[in-house]
Amino acid sequence: MTITDTRAVSQPFQAEVSELLHLMVHSVYSETDIFLRELISNASDACDRLRYEAIANPSLIGDGEPPKIRIEPNKQANTLVVADSGIGMERQELIDNLGTIARSGTKAFVARLTEAKDGAGLIGQFGVGFYSAFMVAEKIVVISRRAGSGEVWTWSSSGGGGFEIAPASEGEAGRVARGTEIVLHLKPNAAKYLETYEIERIVGAYSDNIQFPILLMPEQGESRQINSASALWQRPKSELKGEDYTQAYKSITGAFDEPAMTLHYRAEGRYSYAVLLFAPSTKPFDLFEPARKGKVKLYVRRVFITDDADLLPAYLRFVRGVIDSEDLPLNISREMLQNNPQLAQIRKAVTSRVVSELETLGDKEPESFGKIWDAFGPVIKEGIYEDFERRDKLLALSRFSTTLGEKRSLKQYVADLKPNQTEIYFLVGDSIERLKSNPRLEAASARGIEVLLLTDAVDAFWTSARLEFEGKPLKSLSQGDLNLDLIPLIDEKAKDKSEPADEAKTIAVIKASLGDRVTDVRASTRLTTSASCLVAGSHGPDRELERLLSQQNRGSRTKPILEINLRHPLVAAIAKAGAEAKTADDLSLLLLEQAQILDGELPEDPAAFAARLNRLVLQGMA
Ligand code: ADP
Ligand code: MG
Image 1 (spheres, rainbow, N blue to C red):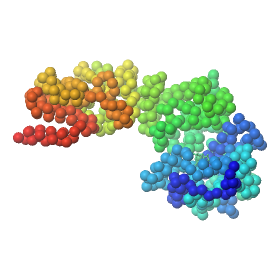
Image 2: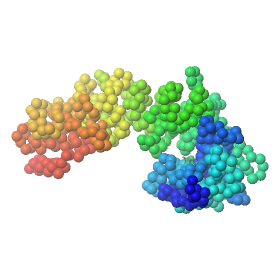
Image 3: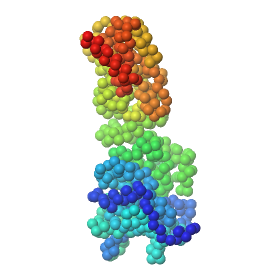
């Protein structure tokens, strides 16, 4: 190509990389061990990619040698080498991959960095890949030969503003027959990473499940393999202990927490495949990013194929792990995966299995399930409206905050129904505190009826579907008619026996005052102490859903129905004031505005509202 292609060039880092490197170079983060796990994970990815590309192009593994990873400490030179005979990088790949930030995890890390005071604390949470090596190295040289290529290039940097790209020297090129060699010139305080026992300890803790052999080349003596390099999911469950799974979870997923659920089985029959899946116990930072996909890795006969084959539906995108098929063709292209019927079968079967496993966990180990629910409940609930087929099961495993307690299941709700109660009641809003003081709860509270208090953004959506659980319809307390008359009051004696205001007359007065601000005014069956509330018609969306959609500019709001409590003195006063009086207008508007404020909204005209209130207060004092 051009002349610059064969010359050494210096290039600045992308600004975000500089920022990240600055943090790494000056890191006070004490768990520096993770750099080795990151480099080994990259080496393993490179071996995976070589094996995958070699399916179509076997000459890439010319020597037939399966890819390997090599770790070589050298005390004399104060260097630690991590090398792989994987896919390698061309010149441009070195520039792109090691000069910019591509992966979403690292991007999110940098974004957090600007907010967080304790940037170092975040390193452990995110991993941050290749650049973490600058925690232990003052200079890094990467020598790489793309599989099948005659060219070998070096990338080097001391972690300042930029890096240098140059053709490899003859000696360097000779050392790297295929793949990548990363030479870390260690910082004075990182000398411990030259000790073989340290290296073995870290590999044992983080990288034992890497599928490729990791060879340690001590300065004296024979090289030896220091990982078990087995595909753990292929081993029988009976041979494996809890800690084996935890280890596998960490090395397969790159996570730092403990799994809250482990699912390991082998499906035999029409199709055979091994499944090893985990549910994390903590929430990843990008759970709600639209681009986030499931991260289940597809293997075919132990060869890694891809990690974006959508092996599980979006509402299970927090599940991590491996599915290893015995019968898919090895040379299946990533594109072909899209509409492969066998894969669709596997997806269906595994999805059902994960859902029922979650259900079992909820019954048998509520504490572990609670962790999953706290972290991923809002995501699982997406499935209630997306996965029609498993709707009942997903409703069954959902947990809710209710007026009776935390983490209640619908099964518990139904078991505790009040006499004559035939519906499951809920309210959607943005905080539990606000919902608890919501006037729409009054009639239900007076009867001790349990109400689900739904405060996740997704709740406004799934509740808009017509749902029932064990034959009991779910019903919003802020929508449509409500009839609780047949359900006895907790305290019949406390029943308000005062004379209600005249319904027809009062409503006529209020309607005249409010005009088209509301679609209707009617006597409420919901209220016992408050004067008024707003509800939506029985058809059409819940008010909370409308509010959410209009905030996102997706749809306009319809006018609500104003419900009034005929036994409330304010309402009685309206009837008394009569249609002509200014006071009736003021009071009617106040009923509407009060209800809006209780919904967390502002009155349409706050100044007029204040003036009105002042007028009424002064009248009362006179
Ligand atoms: P990630 O591994 O999440 O993509 P890293 O920062 O660890 O992020 O690595 C950045 C990129 O550099 C990788 O995606 C890969 O393309 C490339 N890379 C790093 N190490 C190697 C290697 N040993 N062999 C081939 N490519 C590598
Ligand atoms: Mg990486």
